[in-house]
Every structure is written in C-alpha cells, then in structure tokens.
Length: 440
Image (tube, rainbow, N blue to C red; front, side):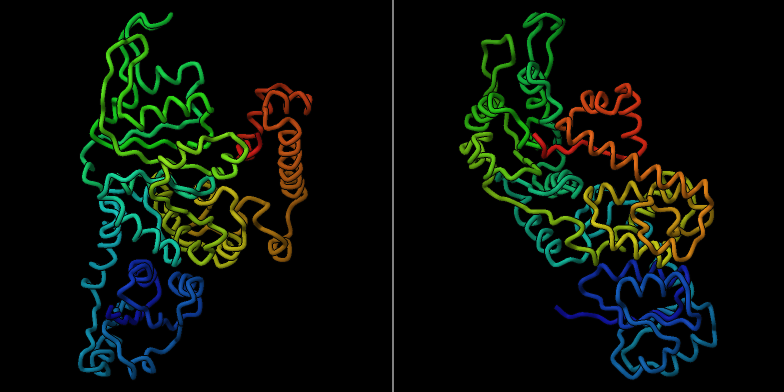
C-alpha cells in the first residue's frame, strides 16, 4: 500500500483536529507538526502520539511531502510554503483546510466514514494497535457470513460494540439486532423471556408474549455474558441452537426462527468446561469463529485517541466545551491499568468534563487514585480537600474488602460494614465500585 505523507504547519485547534483526523488513517503518515510556540493543543497531542514536532518547517521541505496543511492563518507562511515546496507537493490552507477538519466532525456525528459504517461513536472505537487492526479485518471477513461468533474480552472492552459492528456489516443489517444479557434473565422466567409464553400459561400470564428469540427472527441474536448462564438454561439454549425450533411456554405448537447467533463472555470457558460449569457441546456450537478483545492496559498507545474520542462525545452529551487534556492528565490516564477498560475510561472522561472549570481537563479533574504522586509535587491541597480525598480512598478500599469477604453479595457486605444495604449501595455508586463477577 502506498503511504502518503503530511506536514501540518500550525498546531492550534485546527492543527489538532487534522492530527486526530489523519493519525488514524493507515494510508497517511504525518511527518511532523510544526508551530513557533512551545505549548499548543496540537503539539501536546503530537507528543502523546509520538509524532515529531518542530518550530521550523523548512528542513522538512527537503524530503518528499505529498500534502502540507497550513493552518497558521498567515499569508506570508502560505506564500513561503508554495515557493519552497517540491514539484509534486500540494499546499492546503484557509477554507480548504477547515473543510478537512469539519469533515472529521461530520464523521464523528455520522458513525465514522470507513470502518464500520452505521455505527455510532459510542459503538465504534478501534485505535491503531496492531491487534485491534487485525480484529477489525477479521470482523470484516466474518460479518457477511452466517457463522456463529464467540467474542472474548474483559468487562468494558467493547464486546457488544463488536457484536453490533458484526450486525451492521452483515447481510441482515436491516433486520433486528436483539441483545440478551444472560446474567439479567431470572432463572424461573428464562423460558418465558427467551421463548415467549401463551396467555394463561402461568399465574400472571395475562396475554401472549413474544419471546426475545422470535423478536430477532431474520436478524441477529446477541447472547451477552453467555458464560454466566446456569447449566439448566444451557441445555434449553442448546436444543434451540441445534434445531432452530422452540415452543413458547404453554404452547404445544413448535415454532421456527432463523437468526444469526453471536455470543460474548469475560469468562474462561474452557476452564468452566473442565469444572463442569459450562457445556462443551454448547461451547463448540458457539465457537465456530472466535474474536479476542485485548484489555486497554495492553494497548496503552491508543489511550490518547480513545480519551479524545470520548472527550468529543462527552462535550455533546454534557453540553460543555472542554477541548483538550493536559500533558499531566494524559500521562496519568496512560499510566493507569484500567480494570474497567473503555467503559471506565469513558466514565472518567465524563466526570472530568463535568469538573473542568475551563476548556482543559487537568490532573485535578481525575479520580484521586489515578493521580499518583505527581499531583502532590505540584499542588498543595487544602486540609479539607486532602481529608476528602483520603476518605474516598479509605472508603473505596473498605467497601471492596467487605464485598470480597461477602462473596460479592451486597446485602452481606452491608451487614459486615454495619450499615443499611441502601447506604452501602449508594456508596458503591458514588465511588463507582462494581461487583466482581469473576467471584462465584
């Protein structure tokens, strides 16, 4: 593949937007970002993305450059670039350069031109890590088939996003996409929710109900957290997958549907099979094609891109203009291990946008555990603020300890803590503490 080269001259708002637009394109390479100033939006982002920066553009004109963006608003710079450029180099400035970064805004609003057309920004986050680019290619290849796909990944890595992308790129993209969270289905209502029921089938069945399987007829059925499905339910699901037939509760008439099956889990299913917690025949039925999503901590180089993408979304949702992330804050985000992966990062960016007083996210707007010792070197906290932050750290540690001792049972954990369940749960929400599903 031929790679085109770009030089960005001017690293303010326009330069940063061009950087965000072209950094994610495999057929373009940004040679450098140039600005006379030492600290601008574009230069900060370029440093985070390991793209060369400079104060003078002239040395770069001696090498092959396909496209030069001049976003300095200086006619003198524009004339100088046109005079010094190579024969086959194009210089773009003024309204034409603005068109390119407005195109980027349109792409964010419309689901991103290229890659997964039709997905919203919340659904689609890829980045530039080689494993994610390989995953994207695998998605493109398997999506148009009717093969079942099993998606592995930690909580928050974007498994449902991948499932929706598979549906959007499939031959049934105009048909229903029905997502089922297997952990949310009550055991005694599994058949009724999954397959539907007839009026009078049981107490409370006042009318016929269409099951989730039938709602997905002709389209895609996504079984999220399939590893948490109890064995008895696994048997009923397997029977349906083998034949495509089912009976609503209270009915003697079999029904048939045609659906594409996608499933996802954060569990080690092979271990669950060895421990007889998951059926091997169901596993083989679902795992015809598998996809593995790497954890965010394994692709730290993409964190700046994800952070800025979530920042754009947060500004729209929260209706607040916060345009950049300081170097110190970005350093803390990149160093953090992200047990909640992309979902946690998105929540942190939302929180920071709410707290930000100006147009930049600073270190002080991040949760205290992420800040490390860097903040203490630069900022002298008031006694009240230091006390509040230390109390938050203490509460977080104690609540997690109580949950671990109680086997992730909130009611038991509240008893151990000596407080009402409602108070304990509110503290969990305040501190953004989630139950650890891997503890059985």
